[in-house]
Length: 398
Image 1 (spheres, one colour):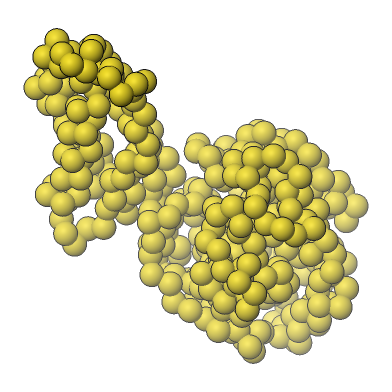
Image 2 (cartoon, rainbow, N blue to C red; image 1 turned 45 degrees about the vertical axis):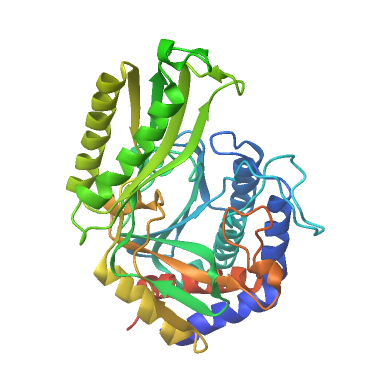
């Protein structure tokens, strides 16, 4: 019964909801909103969920939307998550659904995540009599910008009563038809830091009368690279990268102030703590030896994302049993970060990738690229993966 009913759900997604899911995605793609600035998007989501007769909460954790669908009989409660914020990137695609907001675009597929999950909610709202248990639809704001929306939504009770939580991310690194899973540690913890170098400006012809903040910043860049190469075990993955240097006003002026911004990526909590300590120690030492002052602003971002073994196995089996053409790929852990990690700190679950790269080269650009786009067949496949997981939990096996 389980597989036959899931197969029926899959057919209904194809026949009744595929075009609507694509339409939702294109509508949202044209109207992107930045993290913590989302207004139209959550209102749109809430309106669609209300049409379906779900129990809807808005403003969850500040900007999220939660819909609750109760089945006709008691059983477990499964949470499914989609994010809906965009990025500060100018859309350079030449398509009819390109962003209409200057300097803002959906360059990571969050519009697709939201549309696919709306499709799942639409279908299952008509299948209450088939469900033994409940589904919580988590539509999350502000994934792209720490502190993110997940932590606040959890604090606001979005996981209360939930037994397991699942998330899906479209991925142009994988071709359409592939599903990427990783058991255990999957994504890195991410931190950010800023170094404010305060020297003494002056004439470039008289450097001995100045304290050159640019020279000091250059020294910092070199020394910071020694943290991973000389202070962290070569068997422990870690990254320290400087992404921004800003200083100076003219070719013949020694800059009194220079700013550096960077990121730290780790998997091990002890390595995470050690790297922060080393950055502060290096800043103190360079400041002392250079006769400058260096202020360190350090922000702990998302924790490492760790998938749970049992739930990862459930997702693997549910997809492979009900999607005969699916190709399951075992993914290696990566230095990218995701605030879905917070959900997994509170409830068992897993975060998986759905391939979104098609034959068309427009779908080959990486995430966060100005020409990012997806093969929209992946939207329906994402919905089907969610439905397969729901079926595992909520369909009577008697």
